[in-house]
Length: 355
Image (cartoon, rainbow, N blue to C red; front, side):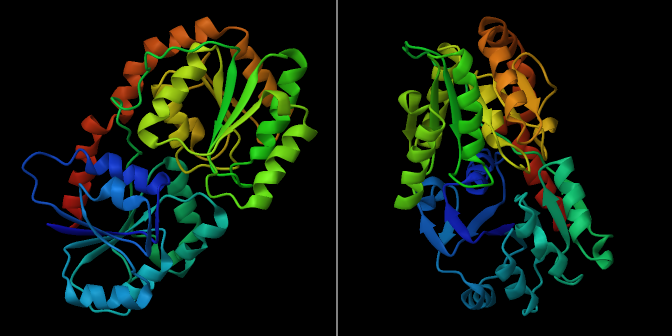
């Protein structure tokens, strides 16, 4: 079975990381020939080349040529309208599935332009996203199957790490430096926490490709929020090393803070929990679906900075209990999300698409 994944952005982001976790656990004795197509390579070749044949330079027109020259049993298009348009203009025998990962409303508008004959169905990652797909697609597509497959994660990569660390508690924030992830909300909440916990440190991880003016804005805002003396910015950590970061947060009595305006699933939350760090996050999108609220997982209303700070303080004031409870609960998270156990379900879903 020859499968082509098409995704415009060949970047080390959530979508490609998810492909990586699925590809690493292809079923034994499988008959899959995996190909991936992107516009360009921004680090993805190193991540995926061991598991798939990669193709770059695929815009709408070159994709049409590529598909005329190469036959695939199944084409999976991930949030990339130009590839849907390319397929629309060809007479292909391939089954076509649109896989939806983005939760940003303006980026979901392409769903309303899909025509009934373009595709055979949808795959997405949460109940929340099933609702968003139904909201956006045309009435003529209501009979198309929407299959949910929750994101998976390698629990052997994301687990508590024995690491030597010392110092005050750290509240960590991971993501792109943009309005959607809302780095300013992180600093607002940090400023409130600092009123009660003078020694707590606040770390941002991500934003390697930030333009110079945004970089300056981040440090200026940290100064404005009066956290600059306790602020640290790590512009990049390799995905396979993130468990070490989360373990530092846990061992130093801190936590992960997520301030996103929406999430289709919430990979950084799952990574944090599996690696042993309690987490506070916005009550938006699919984040409440990950697990129930507890001493180690707390939700707050979007942009309610005082409530977000109070949830963080609840964990900071009782870190031993939060860490102990998370350690006991981790096997349940592994059972729900571990890629080695769950990925087989994804590949079974794909096999059913071509039968």
